[in-house]
Amino acid sequence: MSPPDDDHTPRHLARSSGARTPAGVGGAYRDVSERRPASQLADAARRRREHPEGHDRNRGRRPPAPEPPPRRRVGWVLPALLALVATGAGAGAVLLDADPVADPVGIDQVVTTPVLSARRVPEAVAAPVADRRLGTDLQAWLGASPADTCLVVATEGRDVFEHNPLTPVTGASTQKLLTATGLLLALGPEATFRTDAVAAAPPEGGVVAGDLFLVGGGPADLGTTDWPEMSPGTRPRVVHDIDELVTAIAAAGVTRVDGSVVGDGSRYDDQRYHPSLAPRLIDQDQVGPTGGLVVNDGFAAYSAARTNSATVPADDPAADAARVLTERLEAHGIAVAGAPRAGAAPDGASPVASLDSPPLAQIVAEMLTTSDNEAAEAALKEIGVATSGEGTWAAGAAGLTALLGEAGVSSEGVEVVDGSGLTIENRLTCRTLVDVLTREQTGPILRDGLAVAGQTGTLADRWQGTDVAGRMRAKTGTLRNVTALAGEVEPVQGGAVTFAYVANVPDPDEVTPAEVGVDDLAQILVEYPRDVDVAALGPLPAAAP
Figure 1 (cartoon, rainbow, N blue to C red):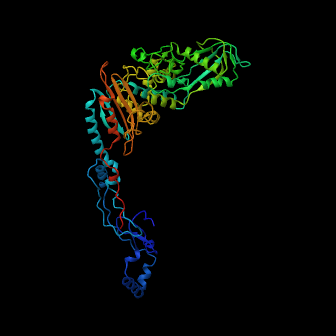
Figure 2 (cartoon, rainbow, N blue to C red):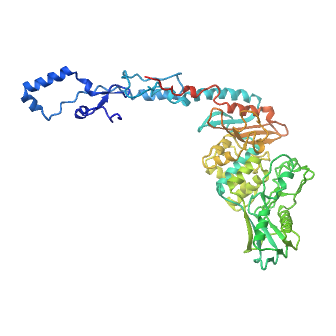
Figure 3 (cartoon, rainbow, N blue to C red):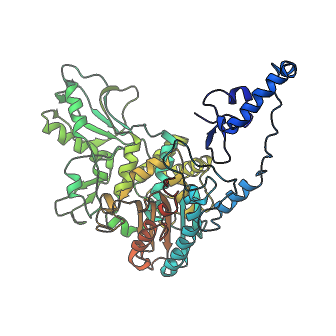
């Protein structure tokens, strides 16, 4: 039977068979028939026989209830106890004095941990100890970092360590976290980018009488299936097969194009590389030319050798996209009479076929996992289109800055120049990186898209065979004068830790992940809370009575 809602049970209920009343603090109950021995019951019966009048006068009246025992005033005790628990004061149980507890009835075990005990909130006791140890470890670890360094570590909505959190630094490819957030804020995670094939007039009898226009619709990552295997360097690539558009054109009944395939990249301006980009990065094919219509990241020639000399960027990405589509149409048996070129589609053109990209959430994930520089630059110009109708770097930078501010992301010290982070003129802070990673609406999409240590993307070959493998998702950032890492770690003891680390030295000096011990940073975070066994601080197991 559940205990009553208060301590004032009416006597006529207490006298009923089997009724129970509290037997002291602790919740045990005893049968009320034990209150009066048989001798007392006999004396009461004799008095009723000798004085029936008195008995009748009181018949039907309820005897006055005994005064309840005075309650212990504990209003101040609970807040004090909670304060002690929250600050981690004391090791072991924090007890509130209580009256003796009667032997349990009808149960087999007794809970040995008091309700008001620090063991009831072991995380609150462990957190301050763990945070202090983490701070000591990180402060010692930072000894190998240059002066121009920031680090922020957060868990469960609170910062557990900060070092220069608002210092503006160049984040290299961690800049993509800001770009991705801005694109998600501008368009939403379900948005897609459509590439259209249109003509001045609908095809008749399977023939496009004039030109077939290929119109770019944003950072769709169009490509051919051989590009990822032949692209330069070791950076993984992702393409969305342009042959799917060819299949759609064939499904529309087209068998011949009497004119040319014309590539329309007018969605963005014709500035191919940001003027602040170091020429060596272009020579190293670190990024291809940016445009409103791009196939194979804007590279017109490449080979299985995957060398820089064999990889040639297109002078005009839209014209090269027209070339690729022409070749793929002919491979599918669709004749094209004219040579490919670039140009603008006429107003009011008739649709022939189209190809939608995957949802933006997937585009963002691919960009972050593989550190796709071309997609990031197109993304910044797309932000410009979304916020001002202008597909330029300047418009995108202004739009991204405004979007981050409106979303409540810390923008102090932030200066957006490009989308990929290849230029050293970008500025961000570790606070900004943690803010975008933990933002409620867009943060989970970013974190899900990060490379996984020892498994995927840019981290596939790192931290293999360690505790960090499979437990860290992160975005790297590397230029000759920058090393950075930002993401989320799942510690061995559970939970999640978000972090951002960026180290800069003056260009052209160099700093590497090995020099600052980035691998050790990940190991420190995965061990949090170090040497604190939260399970051992939990409630004690129940004991037999």
